[in-house]
Image 1 (spheres, protein in one colour):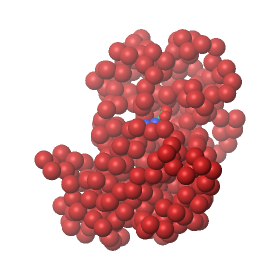
Image 2: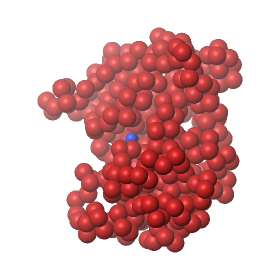
Image 3: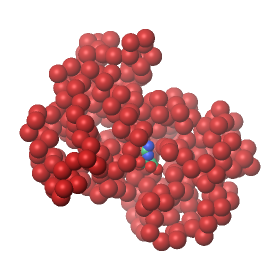
Length: 317
Ligand code: NCD
């Protein structure tokens, strides 16, 4: 990781060496997760606050589990029952929490760039757990880890990221992450669900899933972000499923080793057929499991005692 950088805001913060380092560290933490008592003292005495302005189940639980396994103390800021509902600004909320003494703050916010703003107001490390349509870096990291566990080196592998790319921070983070690791990234979806501009994105684009399906190593389905869509972007969900969903016939065309991935929560019958989601090459629950280890690695690297990961790892083991 960029050692002068105490925050993880975007996949653009990480180059290939940083990602490699995080994935390697994650292997040790995955091993911790398999122990009878899956807990290490690595972050004892550190305090991490959760600041979730958007609904979240898996990401929040995953970060909480990661922090507990590292023996950190946590502070739970519940937006729905908080001063934010009484009109307090983000800045005042953040400064109030920081005044209690925190080392890290994990933020999810509906506005792109909110975690970045917070870095101006606090000394703590800021970790972006999803900001608007912008970025969700720990999701991309756990996806890279899961893909690499199955496929080995990702250089030259072909991933299609399919569906509602326009509204998806997961698509933006994963496109950057997989491209950085040398994979070929193809975005697939109707024009209405593509970002207005793809200038500078390290990707190819197609509007026809059948054009690429036989060639894929990973078929990555995105959730239809119905809560973010203002216009009628697809005629009907049934038609979307026919055109862009991973139904049985398309899933049968994937190569034998190809993976089916989804960040969750899945809309069965929309972006993915229910029975396809339950196939052995659909690794959705593995993604969730690996999410905890990835977040342990991120928290450890940003908040841990030293910069020498190897030595710190020995201390952890
Ligand atoms: C994603 C998110 O919230 O960005 N989900 C997640 O983190 N588990 C994707 C989504 O909601 O579709």
